Image 1 (cartoon, one colour):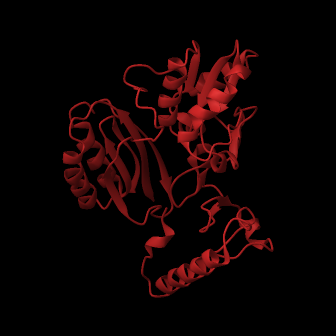
Image 2 (image 1 turned 45 degrees about the vertical axis):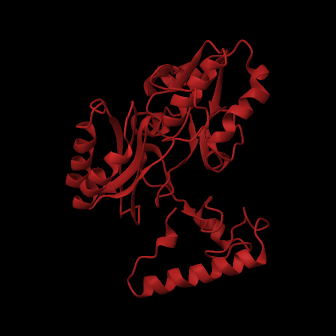
Length: 302
């Protein structure tokens, strides 16, 4: 069984580039795979590996100045959900494109998972899913509003176009692990919204701690690794990934007439040119060939 750790932490980092090589070496020494992003605003990422390797990486990060209080969320995978390791410096650890938003200065009020159901059921609370449309498509909270965004960078524009809808409402926001809400709630506070709340620990913490019998979550939660989705108890979901459009599909979707392995699914059948599809077919043939040889092909990663 592989341990999966999702983590983020906002803190001021003077020289994020200098942290990359030592962190990369620690991951490699512990056979840890996944992605870690470093920026002047902190760290974000998901990693997977053996228990000892994950513990070593977490200890390394927490020993860095400003990272002592780093929190993380754990789940498991039946096999390694990543095919490579990336430790990179970025401009933002989660891209919103709003340089004035600083989660170390202002964020919404946290709502514990145990209190979330009661809170979002109150009549003056509007619940907004801050994730992208392809994530929302496979699961969300009952009654939540889907902004229909293609990327998190689109959220500020959506809010500016829809703000009047939420007059005299308390705003409750949620995302996968909590990081997008750190910025989206801060953004709303900067726009003059007084009462902004978000689910502490995100959907992952909720699914881990709230029983399925009591849950207001419907469907599965999209995750950015080869598991594709998780459900209550953070067990692996049934979804696979369309290698063309990167959207989640269920096993039964592979029986639809539009589906071609590695080339298209019913969701993207009209989105690509014939030249694109031939390129996808060539890539898929290389993946199949690599598997028959017992090799790993990097094209299967995100």
